[in-house]
Length: 290
Length: 337
Image (cartoon, rainbow over all chains, first blue to last red; front, side, top):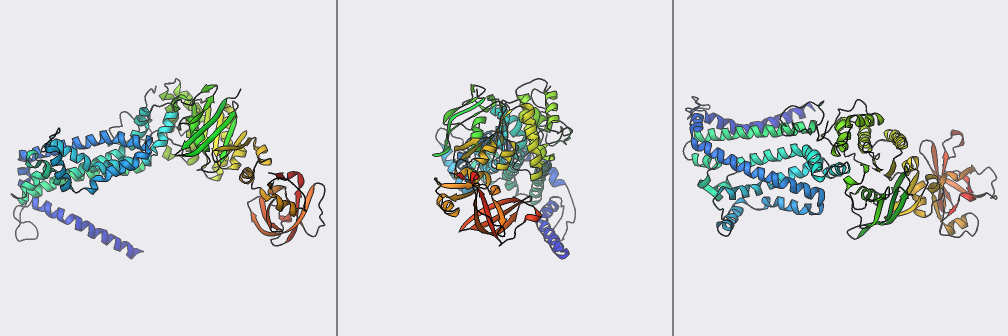
């Protein structure tokens, strides 16, 4: 038993070293001054970060990437949440079709998808090829499986159909049932899907390069451009990018872990402040409460 | 005048008839049970009354108001689900208050508190569903439905997920509350013992139709057909020709004979037993004995047929496996189907 535990610990330790080593190397390179023929850098500097954070192109690329992500993920939540809810609760026979549609992006390689999209939107009534709008559309499709699985699983976990039935029998309209019962209970699921999608889109390169290229420079395109100029600067970009991803992953883990312990409250003030600590003694506030 | 009237209700799913021309009536304050095996249509009928399923044909009237095509929220019926369907994001208090808030009723706090006291959950107002036991969750679900003062309370196998002891206690509680509030209740279960314990009236369903209805004792002692006899009380059901031959070439007319296992009596062969005006006496030997606590079930073989005989578990009267016995069959307890 003890030796088995030691083996497991060693295996996990090796995996952690294997995964972290390139990241540590990249981080060291991003703060290295001179590093030619020694194991560790001979001198350290933060000039690459200063150079990076003084580069307006970096911030512009960051802003563009954020714009694309917020638009794509926001659009996806706005469209997919009601769609999945309505199909799961009221039109269950169509669920298979929705699932197949949501899984389509896995079946189409990005290069094929990109070429098809360029051909389709280069002429005709909707000429958006080369603009950020085509990228938003492509990203919407890319994150579809994450959004679909996350929201659907959350709905299934809480037995949304029965909750809606119960709420309706107690006098709620369909919308009230969704707003007061279903939404607060799947909020953590939506957030997890959203954060995973954001993390995925942050590192998306192929669609960005093929569909808009230099016309709308995203963070990944900026990174690929800098690869040819300075390795140190590229490392600083990668570490900055990883830090953002790490923050996002931490948020996902925090929400997931807390969701296992207790559900999210339905409270007008708390609905959109899930990161705050909650007191289990607080009572729920609903419409019409005295 | 009936308080609940279900008139020729039919429901079909993908060319399969789930409810076939169902009709039933209930008086105000009655506790009725829909009893049947899984898939017999009892839950569909309950959901149709609640408005969660559309019926294809027929009508549903409650308090002389036709509710057949009303949305669930306008039917004034309360429902308790098998899985409780409590709102996980709300406390016990808020779960119970939900319906009152949706309907913008007054005196919410006092009404909810009264209901919490009634279902014996005082002190649990601030708890979330996941912090409660199964029995407590079911009490919340019951209180949530009752606080709305529904005209009809629908219970869809509400006790099936609970262990035996809690289940028995909740059965008593349910009966007490129902009597106290005099609320017309329709209970769905597949457990005949539960149905017998709770109901004023039982409707036995099979394949989308009501095969028999009546008071529990009436259904138990006078099954109308083989299905009811086999489903309701572990009846011994024998082919009429086999039975006639078994008891001595008599000429009963019908298809089958049903005899309850507890009306049969086993006596040791040492005693000289003869057929009398009241009983038939036949010989047999005990193939097996099983014990269900206070009852011993003997499996007795007689002339190629198997009869089950139940007797109270009394240490001094236990007959041994493999021993030869006389079986006394009371003539008036034999039901010809």
